[in-house]
Length: 123
Image 1: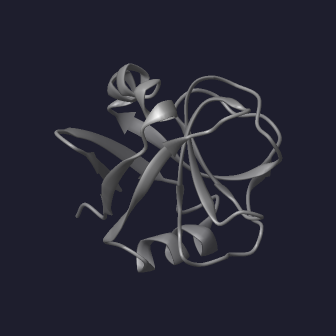
Image 2 (image 1 turned 90 degrees about the vertical axis):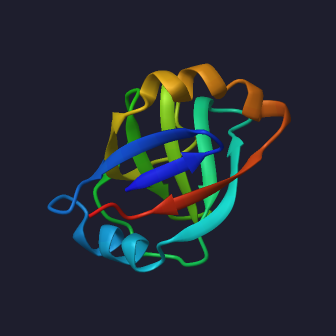
């Protein structure tokens, strides 16, 4: 999966084996134009909403920088780029494979000013 954030890109490897239903559901929605914002309480986390809800799958209570998760109670994709204490348990669906340094660089600016992004599936 690829995120286009202005001139920046980030690639996410999806966890097809660990979260097959959620990954299928997310990829079915792509390409998607949405707003990328910054979490307000959990730490260094970027978030964007998706227009569908999925069942809980591959639920974890802790995450690491580069992890990508689905927060089922809020229809939210969470991209963790640094120090983080998740607000709640999340379903782990992917891992940032390229662009994590970019997310660390631009993440703080998204706290005050969310931006439009395009999420697409790369073949």
